[in-house]
Image (cartoon, rainbow, N blue to C red; front, side):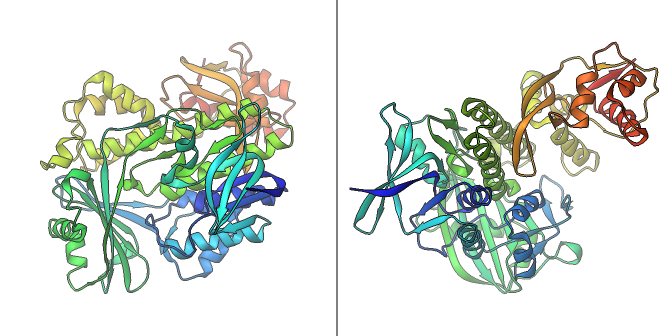
Length: 518
C-alpha cells in the first residue's frame, strides 16, 4: 500500500448530493478537499423531487442558475390524495415558490462537476476500503482502491457521505436505531403518461393505495418516475413490477394518468429502514452527513434536502473549526443536536400522516394512531413543533384528514400564530415559562458562528437563533424581566429605525410565545 503523497484538510467519501455539497462548499471557503466516489457517473438514483427550502443551498453551490436554465421540470407544489376523502390536498411551495423535479443521473453529476470546478480533487471510480487511524485512535484518513492500486489518503477530517452504505458506521460498528419496519420501495419509469390539469400539472403526486402509497414525478414531457412504498413483507420480491402494477390499480388519480402510458424501465426494488446512527455524528475525526447519518421515509421528498442541509451545516462548522474559531467538541455537539432535531421532526411528521390514514390494509394498521393516548400525543408534538402542529390542524380544519382527539388537543396547545405587534414603552418583557436563553452556534448563509437561541423546553413554539453581536442578540440579552421596552431601547442606543425594529421584535416574540409582556 502506498501513501497518497500529501494530506488534505477534509476527505469526503461519496459523490452524491451530500458529498458534492460538503466538498464544494469547503473548497469555496479555501479548505483543501479530496472526494472519492466508487461508482461511475452518471448513474441512476431515486429521490427525484426537490424541495423549495433546498434552493438556497443550491444557490450557495452555484448550481441554482444552471438548474433553472436547464431542462429540469419546475415543481410548483405537491398533491396528496390521502385518507378517506376523494378530494386532493395541494401544498404550494414556500419561498421561493418552486423547486424542481430532477433526473438524478444528471443532477448528481452536475453537483459533482461543480465541486470539482470549485477546487475539489475528485477521484472517480475509487472505492473507500477502510478507515485509517493515528496512534491515538482518531480517524486520520481512508485507505482507498482505484483498480489494483491501494493507497492511504490522509486527512484532518473524513466526511462520510456514502449514503445507505454507511461506510464509517459499518467500519466502526456504530449502533443504528431504526423504527422496526423494513420497508420496500419499487421504482419504475413510464413514457407517455398524462399530466394533472391546471396548476398541478408538474406537481409531485402522492396517493395512498390499499397497502402502500405511490409517487408520480414528472421528469420531462414524456418521462415520469412512478414508485410505491410499502413494508418489505408486503411486496413481491421476485417480481416488483407486479406489486407496483397492483398498487397502481388501487389508486384513482395515478391510475388515470398512467392509463395510456408504457413502461420505460421496469420496477426495481430497494429495501430500507427509517434509521439514525445512535452514536455521535461527529467524533474522533469523522463527520456523518446525509443518509450515512440518518434516513427518513421519502413521503415528503426530504432526502436530497436532508443531504444538502446536513452537508452545508457540516461544511460551515468544519471551516470554523479548521480556522480555530470554534472548538471541535463544541461544533460536534451542535451539529449532532441540529441533525437529530431535523430527523425527529421529519420522522414524526411522516408517522402522523401514516397514522391518521383510515386504510384497513396491513400497512396502515401497523401505523394506526387512532388510539394514541395523551402522553404519546404530547411526545409526538414535541418533535413536530409548532409549525408541524399548525400544518396538521389546518388540514383537519379543511376536512382533508382526521386527527385522533388526543393528538388534536395537544396540537391545539402547540399551535402558534405569529404576527408583528407593537409593544408600549412602559411594558416589561420577560422570558415566557419554559423558555430558556442559551449560548449556541448559529448557521447563517453557509457560516457557523457563536450565538444564542431562544428555546421552549417542550418545543411549543419557534426556535430563533441570533449571532453574537447582532442587534437581535443584544436585544434578547437585555431582556431581564425588570427593564421596560423604553429602557431596553435606551440601553441599546437605538436610533429611530432600530427603535421601531426593537418594539416590533419584542411584540413578535410575544405573539410567538417566547416572551411575556407585563
